[in-house]
Structure formats: C-alpha cells, structure tokens
Amino acid sequence: MSDHDHAHDHDHDHGHGHDAHEPLVVEDDAGNIEGQILVDALQTLLVERGLVFPGEVRREIERLESPGAHLGARLVARAWVDDDYRRRLLADGKSAAAELGVGVGEAQLIVVENDATTHNLVCCTLCSCYPRSILGQPPAWYISKAYRSRAAREPRAVLEEFGLKVPDEARVLVHDSNADMRYLVLPQRPAGSEAMSEDQLAGLVTRDCMIGVSVVGPVS
Image 1 (tube, rainbow, N blue to C red):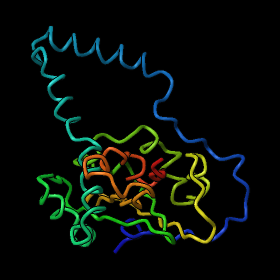
Image 2 (image 1 turned 90 degrees about the vertical axis):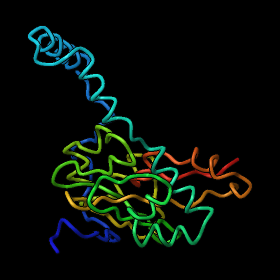
Image 3 (image 1 turned 90 degrees about the horizontal axis):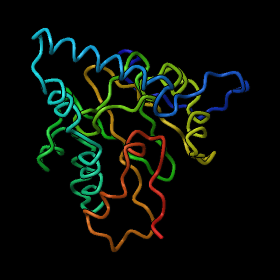
C-alpha cells in the first residue's frame, strides 16, 4: 500500500507558526467571470463551426452536475436512524449505497465515522480525487493547491480556517483519496435531532461535513 492510500494521524502539535502559509481558496477565485466569458465565446464558435450542437454542452454539464451532496446526505441520514445499515455502510460503502438506489461510480467508497474521540478529514494530495457520484462536483478550495498541500500537513490549522476547532483530546485523521479510492465522512448525529424524520435529518447534512471541514451543529 502506498503512502497515498492510507489515513494519516495528525494528533501531534506542529512546532512552527502558520502566519506565512498559503491561504485557502474561498469557494471561487476572482476572475471566474472573465473565464466564463471566454468559455461562452469558445462554445459559440464551436457551434458556429458545427463541431458541437446547440445545447450539447449544457446537457453534458447537467449530466455531470446531476449527482449532488443530497445523495451522500441520504446515506448519512439512514446510518443515523438504522444501526445495522450504519455497520454495512462502514464495511462496504459502495454496496450500502446501492441498497438505497444510489450508484457509486468510483471504484471504491470508504466511509469513515466521526465520534467523540476522532475527527476525519478528506483530501487528495496529488490531484482532485473526490466522490462525485454522491457529492457532485468538488468545491474550488478542495482542488486548490493550498488545501491539497496543507490538509495533510497541518489539518488542525486548516480546520480552524473553516471555523472548526477540534478538541485537543480528539485525534484528527486525514484520508488521502486516490484514483481507486474515495472517502466519505459519516458525521456525528447532532444533539436534539431525536424526533426528526430521516428526510429531515438528511436536510441537516452538508457537503462540507461529509468532507470533514465542518460538523452538523445541534438542533435548536
């Protein structure tokens, strides 16, 4: 098993400051509007030359974006209300997803569970491997150089930049995705949600908490 395949336990403290590090991307880089103008112009040119048909690009984009975090949220919510399903999900994520009619296109889906003593964080240090089948397209910060390099090296500092302070007594495990293996974080069920239905619970689950940069807060 290569270094790119396993989880890293970053429970130790780093002996250096973080003032000079590269900042994380906040969702979208500046300049995306100009980029979109160029994309639209190129698409118009391709249509005019008969290389693509009108609407073809839009349909392909819709196909790529049809999976979304709502699919991953269904898995999480079912695991919260059905302990047997939770065990199956942790044992074989792809098969458990199929039980709910959710197809996982990636080769393997590994589900890792947060609890009172462990917090899990997912990244891909080499490129942008990501469970698109159940989370949709990755956010810009996930594929940014800053996140890919820093998540494995200083996860606690990265999490704090997302507004998440993991208790000192809890360990942080970083899971490095690759072409054959994707990870999904099973967050802890929030306090105060005991009376909520499975659909209501799914509505609490966000993309970020299934990557591990956030948690599901208590229900008021």
